[in-house]
Structure formats: C-alpha cells, structure tokens
Length: 205
Ligand SMILES: C[S@@+](CC[C@H](N)C(=O)[O-])C[C@H]1O[C@@H](n2cnc3c(N)ncnc32)[C@H](O)[C@@H]1O
Image (tube, rainbow, N blue to C red):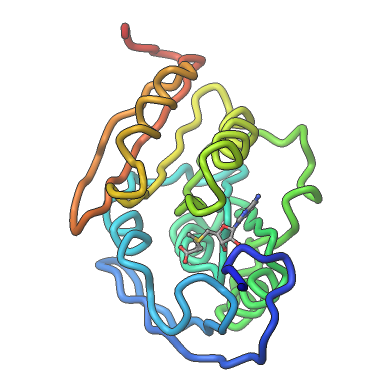
C-alpha cells in the first residue's frame, strides 16, 4: 500500500491544477497522485494559511513536509525578503513544489530533502501540516528535531486534525517546554501556535 509520505511514490502521475484562494492572495498550483491532497487544498492547510500570524519579513522560514507546496508558496508570497525552506521526504512532492515555485516566479523557495538542510540553520518561523500518519514516535522525533531549530524568538504554527490527536500533541509540546496555544479550531482541525521560552519575553507557565 502506498502513502503520501513514501519517498518514491509508485503509480503513474495524474497532475491536476488547484486554485488556492486566500483573503490576501491567490495562485494556481499543480498537484499529483502520490502527493498529499491530490486535486484539492487540504481543509487543515487552508485553515492554517487563513489564521497564521504575520511572518517575519526576512530570515529563514520552514515549511516542514511541503507536499506540492501550498504553505511554502504562501510564505514566499507573503515574505518576499525571506528564504523559505520547503522540505519533504517524498521526491515527487519536492519536484512539484519546485515546479510550482518556479511557475509563480518565487525564487525565494528552496526545496530539499530534510537531510540536505544545513543543521546549523535557525528558523524564524516554521509552518507545518505535519505527517500525523507516520505514527506518534516518528512524529515526536520529527517535531523535536525541527522545533529545536527555531530561533530563540521564533515561532511555529501547526495544523492537526482533532481526531488524529491534536490535543495530546499540544500536551506533549507543552511537556517539551514549548509555550503552545490553540490559536484556531474549525471543521475538526486545530491550529497550534508554538513559541520557545528562549524569546525575549517568556511568559510564566
Ligand atoms: C499532511 S502532508 C502536508 C503537505 C502540504 N504541506 C500541504 O499542506 O498540502 C505532510 C507531508 O509531510 C511529508 N513528510 C513525511 N515524513 C516526513 C519527514 N520525516 N520529513 C519531512 N517531511 C515528511 C509527507 O511526505 C507529506 O508531504
């Protein structure tokens, strides 16, 4: 059985255009079979893009698990002076995201396999619709690794389905020492906003 998080999806390509329409911008992207959310914009991704706070204007930003790239492309549109790193284990997803960025003239999107990102980079913001279906231990390891690369005053935004464990993930993040709040909740999805305690104004827990 194949999954959207396979490294090399099997099966023929079946490209479909998707309109991404947000209050501040709209664009068309290509999606494909074997890549998450074929032929549509995921409801959770749409909620994240509609509710996430403004991004830093400069610096390194991360879309963790970019798929065809709706999050990375939106980040790059909204912060043209920043560098958006789009990472995914799925080679077909990386190729699509690269092509989508090129078609939109977004030269500030850098697409790569996770292991190819400089481990010393610190991210001013991380946005992700994370791969919950990899299972809890793998998800915790993934988030632990990348959230650990947040800059001291950086922040992250994650969208997770409530019935796939959004609330227990929020508790886990808090236990890991992240200040985590539910910033939006709609249609069975939760948006979690995360900051580190290394920022200039840490709050009491
Ligand atoms: C829920 S999808 C989100 C895709 C896209 N951001 C969107 O919103 O449509 C999660 C993505 O994470 C990718 N993924 C799975 N394991 C990963 C890992 N270890 N590192 C990076 N990406 C991973 C999957 O291949 C998939 O494309």
